[in-house]
Length: 489
Ligand code: AMP
Ligand code: MG
Image 1 (cartoon, protein in one colour):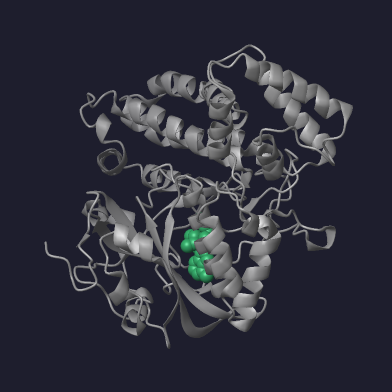
Image 2: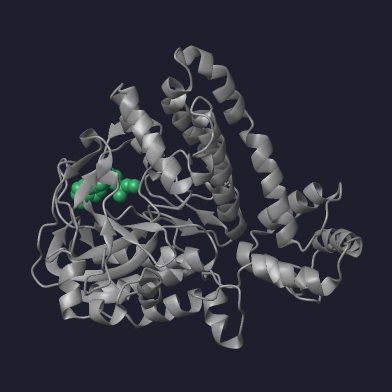
């Protein structure tokens, strides 16, 4: 199939699934589309023509006023456990235009978020405000630059229409790019229909799209093999979040992708000073999705996924409970091993040594007692000299530091390699809430994108430090501290 003049070569594989899984529906045109941010590098990697799309005419397309060739827009059905309780959901304001066959041979969902009402909108207006869409663009692209699997952001366009929330806000649409938007909640939806053929079709879709190595596994073993592969991919993801101090904030089952990409940048935030119980989301009153709870919540979400697969695992689902439970119960050990390997990289440790676990947890305990900045502490350790000044001038820290140095001395590789490993795993720059909020406020209320663009530029190379980045490394002053983040729907 030849590309259209934008470079789109859209396929429609999701709509080969049974009709229950989606509703055909088109974006609702908006008044005055205008490109606010456009991701040229991503466009090019998708085989799109950046020059043609980043234009007034392109804005109409990115707002859903015009459609690419071969687009058959649809909204996907899903449900989800939100804060532990099941809810009917589905794409209430997101519309899938199609799946782009990129030059790397992979398919990528092209989805407009904020594109108008769908059959799943319930009481919602199907729209999105500029601030939260810029936030998703900024943080998802920062995550990508950090090397963490994530949905991507191709563009933000203003709609020229107001959206009515607590305030009247400028409306916007984000073009979200994902390896797919299939979530644990998509499987929960299929399972709720009690239609084994539907579930099997969805499993086939996910295997083909995300786990092609399982295509040849004998069909009876496939569901369990998929469960194991998804568990491993989710563990890799949550370990990456723990590495950089990312708190997702709404780790509901509808926000867990089968691809292993981070999705839904609502109330997420990066931690400044280290505390395992850190929570930002205004709606997370119990701390269910606190920083240190993320692995356990991921295991809980995966147990919900496992339940959906039981009817595919055996004719009598009761027989499948044992093996599925055993896999879910292996989560803590699998996670623990990968977490420790990650901490070794953060601490520049090669090989394994019995002291490593304690070395890592003792550092975290010390950071917690000092409310030390998570990012800056690890980065300070990534220099050759012992860090000085507050909070490093304490006997406790020196004691830890000496033990760490002794362990580094037992490394199989030279110090230079350790420092290099550390600098590749400990970012110098993260999207700090106080800076993100300031930039978004200027963009949303004054239409001034200067700070947003500056942030995007420094966040593109988060592991590279340089004197001109100093301002972006500062933790918030007490009066700048952002204590709560909002979903921004
Ligand atoms: P989210 O918090 O973005 O994951 O959304 C949760 C659910 O609410 C999903 O089904 C969304 O599609 C839906 N939703 C969120 N905002 C809106 C809106 N403004 N209009 C319609 N549906 C929405
Ligand atoms: Mg969501």
